[in-house]
Image (cartoon, rainbow over all chains, first blue to last red):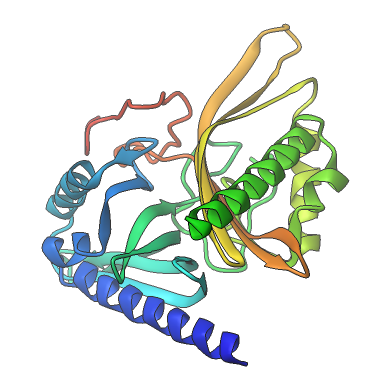
Length: 157
Length: 157
């Protein structure tokens, strides 16, 4: 029982950290985003490179991405699943993200996110982050229109 | 010191489990692969759907993928980074994977992998797996040719 309480408390801490980070993304607040990252973070983002190694490289990538997205930012975490024990934790969820175009319309798609945390000196920091969009094997194209619980056929044209 | 020894022992267990799983992938041994998965695994694979929920759905996906890949399977984990504490662990690495075509030549590309474990009844099982390939924002195409430490320009044609 004591162990359950301890674990659930730790998972609640991760939930709070995750929510705080997501709010920073919604606000395009770079300092608020990177405050959650460890100096030696290894990030696999959805675009451009296999990996971004270290806080400075990943911060620069966030800055570059935000210059591509004008207007309000949409970034909603859906039902994060969190596991934590001791000083190690991870969570994963689908993310609905996008923006509001010059036409005033929402342009959104779904991504997948995994975030892995370590607690150092009492602080939970993300040491590894993985964002992605699946692709269609027949076209090589990222499946930006895919909805949760929907799939395309393997090898379909 | 005791804590360090305990942690490093647990991380070695995860390393062994990961190696065993990778060997099963190389051998296209479905039973050996899914023996490492928890019944309620949530997997984000590189292709077709946002998520595969539950062992049976993910097993069927592995089977379908192997029917697409004839000949010997290449699947090499590069320098996995592992963190573990108590009954929770995660690891991530780049993966060189592909196959040998009918022409006898290797056709390989790089992917990213994150695997998250929980220990239940003394067994470490993967409860979440995330595979992906980044895409090019200008073309929407998966970047199958990308090498480690290489990137394309943001918004480049």
